[in-house]
Image (tube, helix red, strand yellow):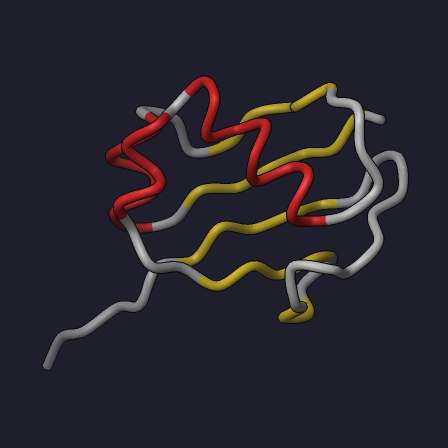
Amino acid sequence: MKVKVLFFAKARDVIGKREMYVDFEGEKVEDLIRHIMVHFPKLGSLKFSVAVNREFVMPDHPLKDEDEVAIIPPVSGG
């Protein structure tokens, strides 16, 4: 399966990219996150939410080819 992954805020700093396409074996968001963490283990130190096609989802949410997945850490400011 191939999906587009967008990284925001601190996740973008850790990955070093704003977006990338990921080709992985799996069916769910949690499979994708595990795959990304193998290549970018520092992502595991962050808390973040995941959105699929602009809708927040849980880790067991199913993915399909060409979904857009966003990794969104909490943001604070004032």
